[in-house]
Structure formats: C-alpha cells, structure tokens
Image 1 (cartoon, rainbow, N blue to C red):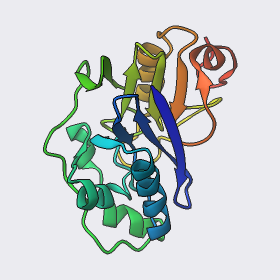
Image 2: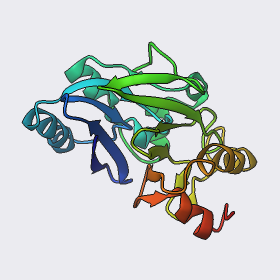
Image 3: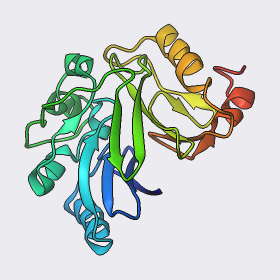
Image 4: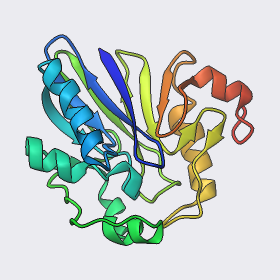
Length: 213
C-alpha cells in the first residue's frame, strides 16, 4: 500500500491519496482550493493510472473538504463521513468566517460511516472506521490494521491534539477518544494526521503533553 501526501490550501491540510498495485485508490480529506492544486492531484492520479474508488472525510471542517466539489465533478464520487458532521455549519458558512470566498455548495454524502464499519478498499486491504469525536461532533479516524497505520484527521497530531473551540468541540471527549481508540493500537502504528508531520502511537504515548501515558 502506498500513501501519497499532498499539502493543500492556505491552512496546509494533509490530503492523502492511498493506493496499491491494483491501481485502485481512495482519497482522504481532499483540501484542494485552487485550480493548480486540483490539477496537481488529478495529474498524479492520471500519471499513475489510478482508479479513484472512495472519497472519505475524517470530519467536515471546511479546510478538509474544499476539494470535495472537484472530486465529485471529476470522478462522480460523493464524500463519506459521520452523519453528526452535518450539524456543523456548511462549507460556505465556515469559509466566510475564516475569510475564504466559496462560490459552490458542499457535496452531501449518500452513505454515512459509523464506528466499527469495515470497508474493503482495494485488494485484500480493509479500512476500519473508528469514532474519534471531540475536535468535531462526528470526527472519525481510518485504521488500516494490515498496514499498521491510522489517519487521524484533526483528532491527534505530532505532540498535539485538535482544537475544541469550534462547532461541536468537546475537550474531554477528544481526550477519551484518543486514549481509547488510537493509543490502544500497537505502538508501531504510524499516525497520519490532518496537519503537520507523521508520528507513531508509541511517540505520542511518551511525548504528547496532552495525553501522555
């Protein structure tokens, strides 16, 4: 399994394109905000002859879904996320509050994700859905057990955690989510966060000042 990291938009969200030798791929938190960023993503997909199968959102803060419209328009894929995320103000409303101008409507899911769901994504590789709410009301993490990695969105960062002062944030819930759902995974599990550099479960247990175990 290959993980291609793109860093998109002025908030520098980590967008992940995950694929394997079958040439099937999934996209996690598409943050493309300009034509050039969209073409960078599409260019990589085209160059490697990838077939995009799924679009997943860890949560629906605007910086993580700015590219959903492009993906829907280009590949016909709707995003998949937890239904509670729809309680957050929509893309245009959020963007306006942060000084962004968006001239299109958000793309709504036609399938919701829930704790414990398992999704065959490509080959023999399965994605497991973990509820890691707290940064947002329905925040999710995506765990690949066979490949020993997890995509945590804005729940957990390298030596940090997500902010909880935005819509539906809950600090105590976030800490519980991290300790119960992420830090119980094997120590060598690689953490792919929504912003910043990669980490491991072992690293965060030892050195994260918010959740040191």
